[in-house]
Image (cartoon, rainbow, N blue to C red; front, side, top):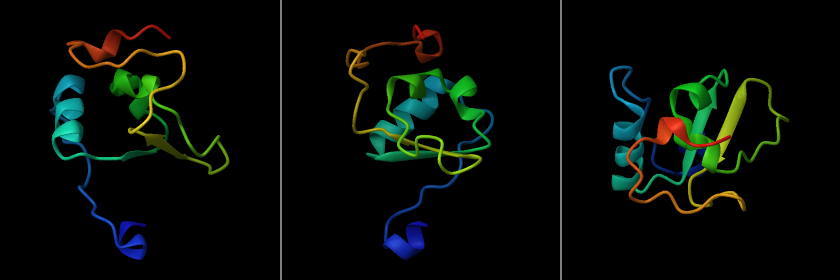
Amino acid sequence: MSYHLQGKYYGTCAPYLTSHQVREALQMHQIDYFLSWNGRDEERFGFLQAYPEVTAGLIPNLRIYDLKKLTANEKPLEGVEDFDNIPK
């Protein structure tokens, strides 16, 4: 997808990184979208729950999170240390 859109692709999340480390890397590299194949990343990376999922479930086995926007009900997450415990 990145190739066809002439965008940058940063690869997958290392399995040994914590949710907090992944969130920091996404912010450091100014990543705009997080793609999740199989839909299990929301369990592993709790911070994703604060961002809108843009496919609306229309693409089977793919979720795309817009990391530039917080959902209307969430406050900015800066300074929060443990993103795995965001209220649902």
